[in-house]
Image (cartoon, rainbow, N blue to C red; front, top):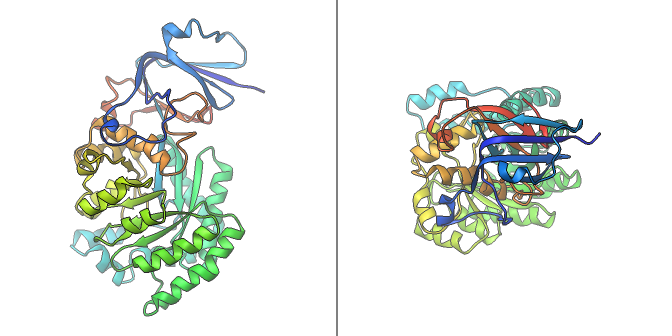
Length: 420
């Protein structure tokens, strides 16, 4: 039966859009369209109308209809759901022992050389059944839903062999089929070099190209293909070979780039028209210039830099140069064990010196672009999917990143359905 939802008396409807923008760049990121004292009308999971309460009286929406649910949001704000465009949320176990190693001063690369890091997660995942992996992942999925995320990109990459990479991608597909989240899947076989290929990286690249990619594509398990192009992982030459192979099968490139060094990953991403290049702690004038002439979204992961004690990417310099910026959580067991996008916004303000308006754009419309979803997600616009959340009573939209430790989400709505 058709079901409608009306949210009325909203103190402020945040990130409204009448112009069908796909992303916002540079100075535009400091502009956030809002409507005070407003309403939002949802029908069959789609945003059908919104405006001021004065306009609502002329909108011919009958509150007394038996098919309509009404929520009074007096004193509250309504935001589009967060779009988390970079996660590794499907994994087994945890890595808090490495947390202690980090505190003692070991670097990310030193931990990896000792068999920790990604290889540790790969070993744990190998021993975990698909059913158990799905159950563990769903705990984290339900966590991010409650914290306001309505769309998520999930990568493989803790398999590092064909069977385990497929296991991860099948779990991602099951999440997509059993939740109301919008889910995008990324094949990241090139996340690290397995121990058996330690001295023959090229042979592992051949395995990815000749064995993994064809079967991933044949089962239609991934939307995107990703490579960790950085010092100690995969070279630009490896990256280009893998991306070209994936593109032949219709997989769209995304890249882990320039987290540890000036790796050339940003340039490789732009060369192959990657949807996004992510991390970017090491970004200079040359990289910014290359990105300015592209359609590739620079995506920053401040949670990882925070957790690892690394320097942060130059967000202020990038935005001031005219670039768009997206932000994502990088939810994973080793370098960013949190999917809280509200905290990501706070880190954007405190550590990256971004304005509240800029961080909201970065975790909604621009991060939707980094997932290929900005036509349907990331803003309050007629015709978009009704993924929104209602806050608790608060004084302003700036209060969201300001109150970094407070739970401010009251109601989550996905595809027009009230979840909590």
